[in-house]
Amino acid sequence: MGADGTWNTTIDSPMGSQDGTLELKTDAESLSGSITGPQGSMEFSGGSVKGNELAWNVEMTQPMPMNLEFTATVDGDNLTGQVKLGSFGTAQLKGTRA
Image (tube, rainbow, N blue to C red):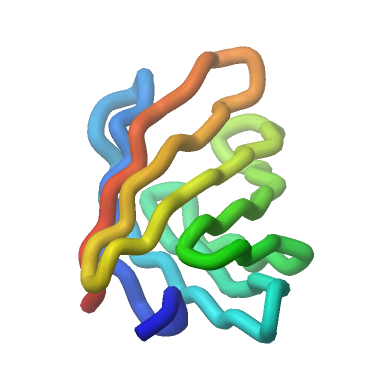
């Protein structure tokens, strides 16, 4: 069971805990999908898959433009990782398969 599918996620950001939904689709070593949260829905492509390690970027526009750099590890029905929040540091990411 890979990373494909829907994940219920929480990002512990400087603005507080942000709940969202992550849709992931893998194709060999490529990753694409979307993340939906309080700031709306944002699609991404060009991510990477190496075993159970994932990496992708999202260009956020609201509440301010920022490149979010995600890294995560999938372990069965659990996902853990980090999000680099531009110049605002790094936040923890966790999720469970929906």
